[in-house]
Image 1 (spheres, rainbow, N blue to C red):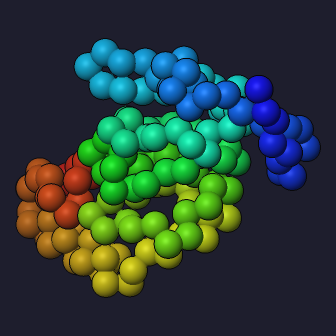
Image 2 (image 1 turned 180 degrees about the vertical axis):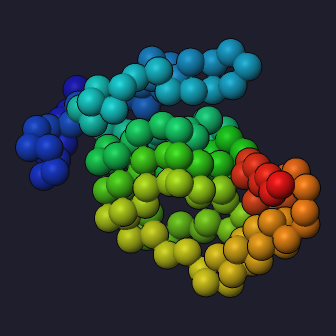
Length: 146
């Protein structure tokens, strides 16, 4: 068992075999989810864990060393997810729901065109009176205007 030093939390991360760790930290029923708290996850080396197909929406992964690919997480949804402090430089956020996600100190770059398209979709939905709709561009974002 190796340990990797983490400057943010001043302790060493415990490095376990990735296959064993995945069996321990994920719960699989109808969907694949994390079952550990962020304080527990921060102690583990998550750098080699595959989060493809994992439902991480509304999860706190802040200041872990998880290697998240926004294109492969369940539903391409990071809604209400705390990813503060993760290294997201160069990651593709095209068509990913980042509504209320915390991406501070991640180096994430969201393309202006993608943001403009997302905002345009929202504006169109809000202009339609008495409309309830879900758009493919605003996946999982419920718009209601009365």
